[in-house]
Image 1 (cartoon, rainbow, N blue to C red):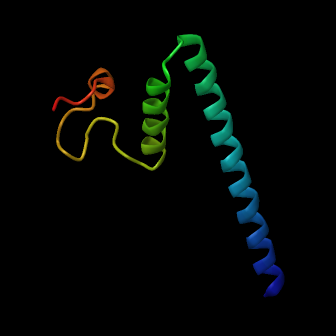
Image 2: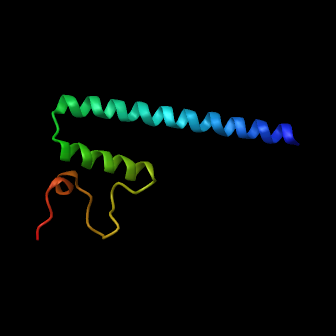
Length: 80
């Protein structure tokens, strides 16, 4: 029984490491694209947060407040 537990823990650790590696590679590619596009620090931050939201399982087409999720609108500063 203890051996099975250790195997399961090792497999879980391996899967977590593979997930972290995939996330790091995705982030690296995103940074390369942002460098080529010469995005501002604010635009980069908006894109990074959007990637985190999507990775958490959010629906890209709908926002919780019911408004559309158009990328240009998201980059604009909110009106007072």
